[in-house]
Figure 1 (tube, helix red, strand yellow):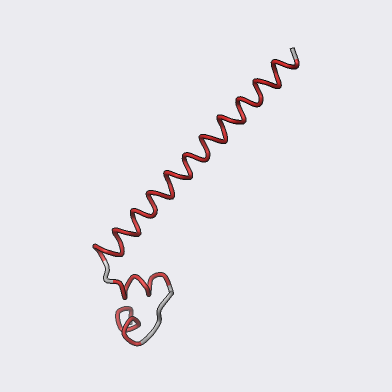
Figure 2: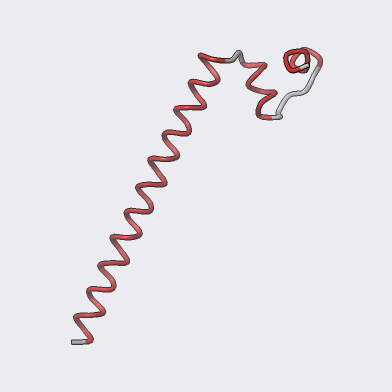
Amino acid sequence: MERKYQIFSIIVKGVTFLTYFISKLIRKLRLEKFTFILKNVIFKDDAFNVLKGADRNEKTSDILW
């Protein structure tokens, strides 16, 4: 009886981990797709750099201020 419980427990943990992993992967792919659209369609590269906080020279700071 305890052996069946251990096998069942391992299967449940495996399925839970796979579900979590797949959902994380889908979320990551959606986020990458969204940032790609944001970078290439909505904003220019300079504005996107300011949003990321990567580039703060005069040219890009003029966009925000």
